[in-house]
Image (cartoon, rainbow over all chains, first blue to last red; front, top):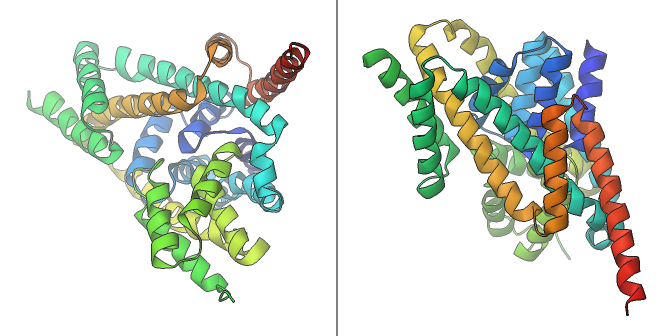
Length: 177
Length: 187
């Protein structure tokens, strides 16, 4: 298992472009290959990662490792996700300016950015189906989703506040009404 | 002569930045601006912006990449390693501690109701991240087509995201090479 963890998270470190959330398509994909965690657990991991200190991507990687096999597995997962950027970062540091202006770097990023965005959009659609459309109390879930989406677009993008509001709303809507 | 920054100083600067990095994603830049540029004068605001731009074009997490690049500037290879470990430290231990605690509460009915709401909020958060990425990624018709094809592949096939990423990079390079050739011929 440790080797699979190393291999999978090394791949995430090497192929994810665009920050913490960009690792989610890979983590989602792992739910189809291994029994480390379920898609629903992944959603909960993202929520916990958002409200704990540190880069979300590291939080989620550590959490995935914990689920897969405890603390040492978490260490392997987190470490192997940082390894490729460390190697690449040290190499790139020597040719910093030239790297960003390089034709091939620019050309591949031109396609990599929309692809990374699409990978995450696919996860959003899949989680929308499982967490909203097929959730318990689907109609209430759909209304709450729409309200929260509008609120996040118009008023507030702070993830912490969104998580807090939704946790309280969940208890109020399902328990007290 | 610039004073040499010690590895311990680099570690603690990134340790602290990691601790106050809450909610994730796009607040790393203002944090590093205040910690590294304003408080410690280790680099200029322009340099930080350059590192940020390069961090976004490298694979992996942006916060980790920028720590590696700044660490390297300050103290070379060891600076990179210390910077990356520093910013990761609290993120790792917070989860290791929380993961074992949370599993005791998951069956509580109130916690389950809270999670019903939180799971919906996570979808909203991810949509927010998609919009943020979209605004930088889809800049012309070509990149829109790349987005659409990638999305269809992810939704309707079981191809691993790693292969989609590799294929996308190849397509990008080929497309831009053809485009460059075409514009040169028309000059």
